[in-house]
Amino acid sequence: MKYSLLILMILIADVASGAVSVTGGWDVSGEGSGSTEGLSVVSNCGTDPSIQMGITHTSSVFGIGADQTVGRSGNLSISLPLGGYSLSVGFDGFVNSSLVLTSPGTGSVSSYVGATATAISTGHSKAGNDSYDLFGSADIKTSGYLYGMGSGTAIASGSSSYGVTKIGTPAEIVGQVSGRSFLGLAGNSTESFASTGGMDNGIHAESRFTRNITEHMTSSSYSSISAYASVANDASADVFVSGNGSSGAWGADSTVAKAAGVNENVATNVSAEIFGLANSNGRYDAADISAIVQSRATRDPRLYVSGGPACYAAVTQASDSSETSAYVLVKNSTWNSVSRTENNQSAMISGDLTNLTSDVWVNESGASAIAFGKILMYADYQTVGDKAYITGNFTLDTYSEATKNLSAFASNSLGVNGNGTMSSSDSSIYGTAGFKGPLSHYSLYNSTSGAKAANKVTEAFVITNPIGYETISQPIKADTRSDPVVAWARTDGAYILAGA
Image (cartoon, rainbow, N blue to C red; front, top):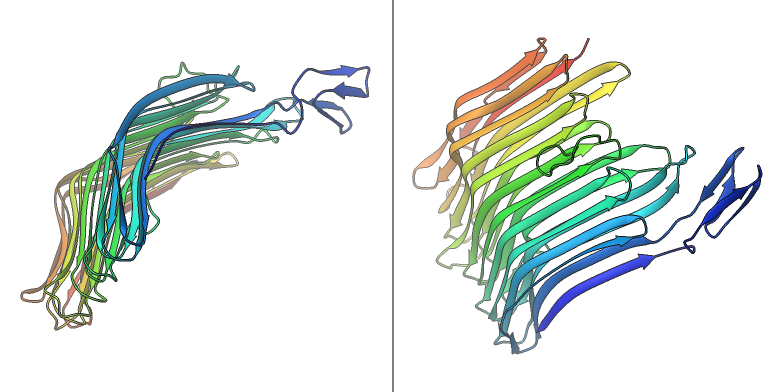
C-alpha cells in the first residue's frame, strides 16, 4: 500500500532573476538575457513556478497477497506569489484502496484528489509585453488493473481547485471539481483480466491562457466526467462517478470586473452521475463499458464550443457460459460551454438529459453485441477579414447491433427528458439550434423479438437572422436481414451563416 499527501513545488530558472538596465543606445546589460534586433530589447526571465497538491492512495500486489489499509482524509490549500504570478491550489478529500490476489498475478488500484497550477514565462514581444503560459487542472479519480483471481477497490471523494494569475494583468485561469469516484474489480479465475484500460474514472477540469511573443492570445477550458472498464476471462468490474466540474479563463485583454461562472472569456461546466457494470463468465468472454459527459470552449481567436454526453457498451462470448453483459447509465447530465469577446461576439451551448443508457448481453458462444449513444453539440464564430461566419450543429445518435441468429440483446436510449441549445452571434448576425423534450430516441435489438428504433423529439429547431443555411434531418434504420443485425436512429440540425 502506498499512501501519500502530495505537495510538489517546482521552480525552474534558466537564468538568474533580477534587475535589467539599458545604458545609452546600444549597450545592454542585465542579470537576465539581452538581445538587439535594430532596437534594444532586454528580457529578464524569472522563475517558472508550478505547484501540485493532492492526496493519493494506492494498493499493489505481485504474486499472491493483499494490500489493504484504512482510508485517509485530509485538506490543504496554498496561495503563493512566485516569479510575477499568483498560484493557488487546494483539496479536501478522502481516498482509499484495497487489493487482494489469491492466485499468482498482478494488480494495482489507486485513488486521487488534487490539483495543479503552472505559469511559464516565455519572453517578451517586440512591443515589450510579457509572453507567458498559464495552465492548471483539478481531479477526483480512480483507476487500476487486475490479472488473476482476486478483487480490488478504489474510492476518491471530495473537492479540489486551482487558480493562476499573471500579476498586474487581467489574465487568470480557475477551475474546480467536487464529487465521488468508485472502482471495483474482480477476477474469478487465474486468467482473469479487469481494468480501466489506462483511463481514469473521475471528474476533471482544466483551463489555459497563452500570450506568445507575437502578441497572439489563446484561451481554452475543458470539463468532463468519465468512466471506463474492461473485463475478460471470467471477471467483472463496476464503476460509479458522480459530481460536477467547471473551469474558465480570462485573457490579458479582459476589462470586466471578473466573476467566476459569469463573464470568463471561455468557460465550461458539467455535472452527472455515471454507473457502469461489465461482466464476463467464461474463458475468452469479454465486456467493455465507457461513458463521458464533456464540455469544451476555446478562443483562438475563433470562438468554438462543443459538448454533450456519450456512452458505449460491448460484449463478445466464446465460451458456453450463462451470460456476458455490459451496462452503463449516464444520469442527470448537464453540459455548458461559452466562448466570448467583450464586443458582443459569442458561441455557446447548453444541454441537459435525464438518462442515456447502453445495455447489451449475449448468452451463446460466438455471439457479440454493441450499443452506443450520444448527444454532440458544437457552435463557432469566426471572422475572415471584415466578414463574420457562424456555424452550429447538434446530433442525437443511438446505435445498436448484434450477431444474427444467436441469443443476444443490444439497446441504447436517450431521454425521456432533455433539452439542448446552441448559438453563435454578434451585433449583426445570429444563429441558434437545438432540441426540446420529452424524447423517445432509441435503438433496440432482441433476438427473440427483432429490431426497432425511434427518433422522436418534441421539437427540433434551427433559426438564423438574417436567413442563412438551415437544416434538420432524422434518418432511421432497423435491419434484421444483415449480419450483424443493426438498428439506429438520429436527429441532426445545423446552421451556417455569413455576415454582410
